[in-house]
Image 1 (cartoon, one colour):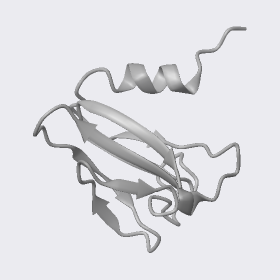
Image 2 (cartoon, helix red, strand yellow):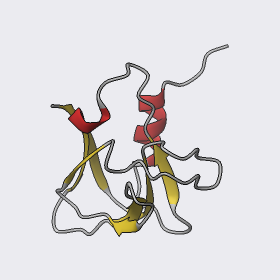
Image 3 (cartoon, one colour):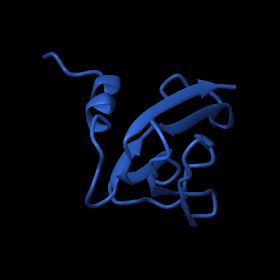
Image 4 (cartoon, helix red, strand yellow):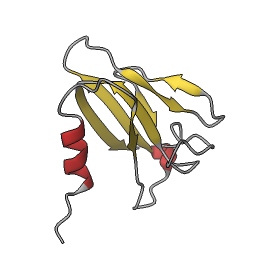
Length: 105
């Protein structure tokens, strides 16, 4: 069975602005990189805002800021969020049009 790669799903998801309930964007660290050394960065094409949040290490919801790198450790809230297990790196996007970059170190 041919299944789309996670990268292609991510590209399809972010191809248009998101408007509605927050859409979870979950990061699966299958290579077991140190999560404090893997960063996700949301860039918009201009001064467009990003509307969304993540749960920090204390479980407190934090608002996402555009052009700000977040380590996977930083966005790994301790409590489950719906079907997302606690400790899983995730953000919840409500409105975003732009690019997502992942970087190491």
